[in-house]
Length: 271
Image (cartoon, rainbow, N blue to C red; front, side, top):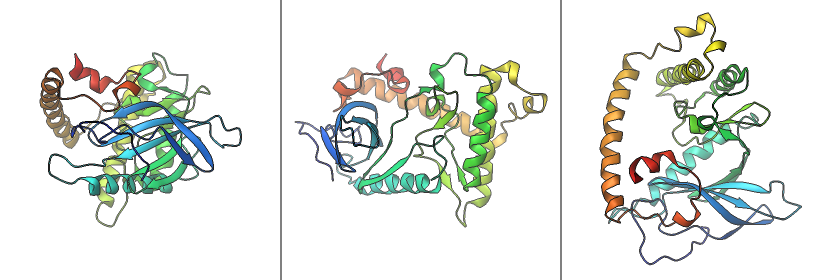
C-alpha cells in the first residue's frame, strides 16, 4: 500500500485517514502529489505530476478507495471492492481512448492510476462546441457496446470537453457492467445514459436538438421520477447533516490544503 503522511486525528467522514503519499513510483517514474480533486467518504482522487522526460504521462490521477474504519467498523474491504469494481470497468472499456482515460493499473488493493485528462468539465462550459452532444451520444453507445452502463451521466462534472471538442468520461465508480442477474436492468441504465445526454443537449444546445430527440430528452419514466424524488430528499438530509458537522468543526478534510479547486458538492454544505 502507498505510504501516507501522518496526521494526529483521522477523520472518519473521509476515505483516507491521512493525506496520501507525497511521492509515488509508478511505471518507472517518480510522481509527486499536486492537487486533490475530490475527497469524500468513499474515495479520494489525486493529481500526481512528474518532470521525468521518459515518463509516458507527465500527469496522472491516482484514486484511493476507502482505507480506514468508520468509528469501530472496518471498511477497508469496501474500499477494496469499490476500487476493484472500477478497475474492471476500465478494463472493459480498454481501447476507447481518448474518450476514456488510459487505465494504468492498480497500485495496491485500494488504489489505482489512470491518465490525467486536460479538459474542462461540462458544467464549466456555457456553450459546448457544435456537435458535442451528438459525439457524446455516440460515446455512450460505444460504452454500451462493451456491455457497460455509465450511470452517472446526470452529473455534468464527470463529462469532460477536450480542447478538440471531443467528449471524455471520467469516474466510473457507480458504473455497471452486465452480469447474468442484471442484464435487464443494465438496458434500463443505458437508456438513462442517452436520456441524460439529450437532456443536457436540450438545456445547453437547444438549437441543435433534432425533432426526434425532443421527446426522448423529456421522457424520464416512472422509475426515474421515483428515484429523483427519493434522492432529492436524501441529498437534502445529507447536506444538512454535513453542514452541521462542518460548522461544529468536525468535518475537516485531511487533504484540505491540497483541495484548491471548486467542488460544488462540498460548497453546498460549506455555505
